[in-house]
Figure 1 (cartoon, rainbow over the protein chains, first blue to last red):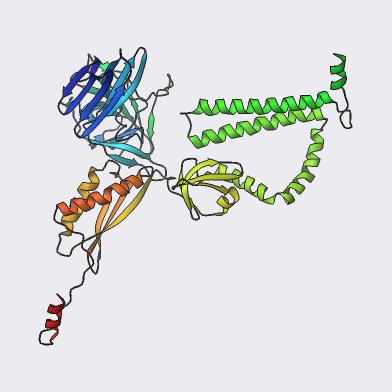
Figure 2: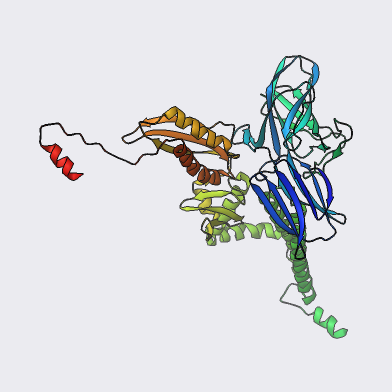
Length: 235
Length: 281
C-alpha cells in the first residue's frame, strides 16, 4: 500500500481501499477503511498520491502530540542498557504532491484509538495510549496496523529501576517504512527522582526502508537534540 | 517657499510653540501608531504556531502599547512639554483621573491582575455568574465572552475580577458522571461489564484515570449505578453526549432494562379489595 502513485489509480489491501478516478472531468479521491470513508475532489491533473505512515496522534482528531506506550514491566539493573522491541499504532497519511508542493489529504487507521492522561489533570498531558508486548527480537507485524519500535533503555543510575511506560513526543518521531515494516528507533534514559527522558534516532532499524513525510517537525537544537522529559515517572 | 516657512514658524499659543512643532508632534504620533500596529501585527503572525493564542494576543498588545507610550514620550517634547514636569503633573492628574474615572481605573487594574494571574485564556470555556461561554478576547478594560447561543457579552474586568470564575478547561482532563438505573431483576455485575465495554471503545474516554462504575443506591424503583468517566477537557461534552445513549442501547441489547418508576400494590385476601383492584385493571 505504501508508496507513490500517479492517478487515476486504485490501491486495495485488506479492508482498505484508496482510489482516484476521473469522473466528468473531475478527479475524485475515495478512501474506505472499514466503516470509515472519505471522498474529495482533487484539482491537480498532474498530481501524485504519496501514501506512508504518519505520527500516530491524529485520529479521531488531533488533540495531543504525545504517544504513550504501556508495556510489560521491565526491570533494569543499575548502570545498564538494553534494547527491546515494542509495537506502536500505525496511522496512514495520504499526501497529494503537485509540483514541489506536498499537502496532507487524508489520515486513516485500522488501529483502535484510545487516549489517556499522563500526570495530573491539572498539569499533566493527554496522550494517545497504546499497549505493547515486550519483544527481544523484531516481531512479525501487520504493517497497516502496527509498527515496530526499537527501544533502547539506558539506566545510568546506581539503583534497580522498573519501567512500564514511555511517553514519546511526535515532534521528533522518525518513522521508516517499506512493504513489510513500519519502524521507529527510540531511547528512554532514566534520570534521578523517577524521571526519564525519551528521544528518537534518525536512523532506520531495517535496511532498505524509506523515511516518511513528517507531519510534525521537531525544533531540534543540533547539539542538544530533542528530548521529552517524563516528569511524572515511568511506571 | 517663504510662505511655507512663514506658516511653519507661525506661533501657536504661547511658550515659543510653532506650527512646525505641532506638525512634528502629529507626524510622530501617527508614525508611532502605524509602527505599533505594524510591529504588533508582525509579532502576532510570527508567533503563530509557536505560542498559545492568548499569550500571542497579550504579547502583541503589550508591544503595541509600549511602542505607543515611547512614541508619546518622544513626541511630547515637540510641544515643549517637560517630561520631568509630567511626573509632578502626573501626580495631580492621577488624583483627578482617580476621582473621575474610578471605574475605568478599577477595570484597568483588574485587567492587569487578570493578565498576570491568568485564570482564563482566549478560547477557554468559562462561567462567570450566569454567563457561560467561550472567551473571545481579553481587553484592557473588559473581557468579551461569546455565550454558547452565540451572544456577544462584554464583562468589565472589575466584575470578572470580583466574581467566581469557573474555567471548565483550565485542567487538561475533567470527569463527568451518569446515574443509570437498572431493574432489581437484572444482573448488576453484567450491567457494569456492558457499560465498561462501551466506555472502553470510546477513544476519548480516558484509559487513565480509569473510569469507575459501581452500584450506588438501592432506589425505590431501580438499582442505581454510578458511572464516572474522565475525558480530555476539550472533548468532554462530546464524550458525555455520545456515551449516554450508547450505554442505554448496549444495556438493552443485553436484556438489561432501565425501568420506569413503578409501584406494586398488594391487597390482603378477604377484604373485598381484590374485586376493586380487578375492576381497575
